[in-house]
Length: 405
Image (cartoon, rainbow, N blue to C red; front, side, top):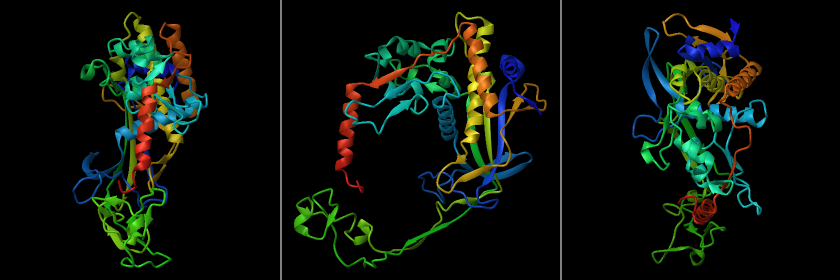
């Protein structure tokens, strides 16, 4: 197996391949046959998992979704963010800085384009200031708003990851007619030959407080939470307000919880999990950069593809701890295949973290040399006063609400 180089990636993007593909086999951390917990979906069905029959080779296999396309994209973005924060990867990452002089929102910190749900088209950026001007009205914001797949130069310059993961500017001045950039990076993790399991739960209260020992009221002072004294209780419709549904001690987390079996979200066992990632070079070739040569356009597309390669490698090294009780272990190093358009066997190439970083640097430099350069200056926005006030009022409401509410 040979090594992926910048030249090979550029040739693939230029037309030598239709896609980059990575297929990783994984097993539960506690070994084959270990139980894992997929994401749950609130549906009125036998269980809460996304189970379906898929064709795998010449077999029909019952599968379960362990990580969706959207979730995988978020994980890939966080992997790129980690590489950017350490200085290992260099590409533009606009962000909104919520730190203030009084430290009121320091817990929010910095939100980057790699964390915002709608990337650079997100309302967080829309309602922030760049150089004292609302982002959409700034020079950068106007250029990004006007960007289209037929002329993606502005988005490439200021937020190239949006060209990789896709972006729909549905909340911009054009509404639903805002620019749409197709997702070129598609990944998911699927478990094969799934068997639905069950889980049990119970709690023994060391104080042995009986469920009918007293009526518990919600305290009028939210810091006190609850009381047994009606005179201290919050009032609702002229009556003391009981805690929770019936005022039993269990409503304030005292007392036993009877043993229970959960068959709707009790985890699964699988024969194997497979992560499949595809970077569509065909989608990248549809991106155009008006006023630039074909050579420059290929260089820009290669730089976006290099971000996809880096995302595959760095996400692999961030491990596959998907959620509580769903830690998966890769059974081999990351591998990338160059998928041709003629149906022939794909060409496999080696790639590691250092090579991925080097290829990205070479691709960015080659594109810059041909007139399509990434922004190198920091793109730092600050939340507009109205956004800070909205956040402040939201927190005030949250502070007044009880956990049940």
